[in-house]
Length: 242
Image (cartoon, rainbow, N blue to C red; front, side):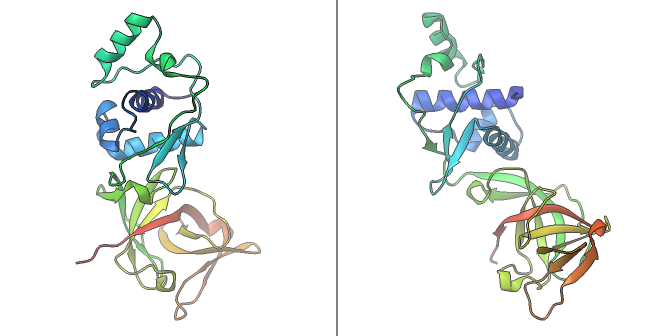
């Protein structure tokens, strides 16, 4: 079952495609749903994708395809489209959403603007060496939407050099997908003893957890399984050049 905001967004995307032939941008969706941040739109899109209502097509710039619509879903009236929608409904006695459906025509997938930027929380610094405390912060980091996949994300500034052979350098911003699980060999944010966080390759070693660096000058770290909690997987990197 979709939330009200998820239904509004799905309806808005469908109407935008049918009426203009182009997917709305993140900025347009944010304004239409009266949200304060584009990160809220990213979360809604991810939720719709996880529930099978839309999908993002590979190798295209943020292309969305509508796979299905909830039965009886009302058309959400958005500021830029309310009058047009009301007029269509009154003339045909059919909601614009249903009128737009054509059984013989597949839903069109149009790209969202490739230069869309969303903001995700920047939660302090994380060690790519010995573990350090990952401090919370109210700072938001603007990130190109194309760097993020499905799910909820946050960012951490990398401190240290233990992951340089994986291309992760001191001062980079690690873009992290929130999750509590990981497979062997994935780069994760590991919280140790509920106080210190580190960015490392994750491996299970019997009843222990081994966190491997990507720098031959650093040693692996081994902990009891109960000492380590996964807080996310590396989804991408953002690097700024001065």
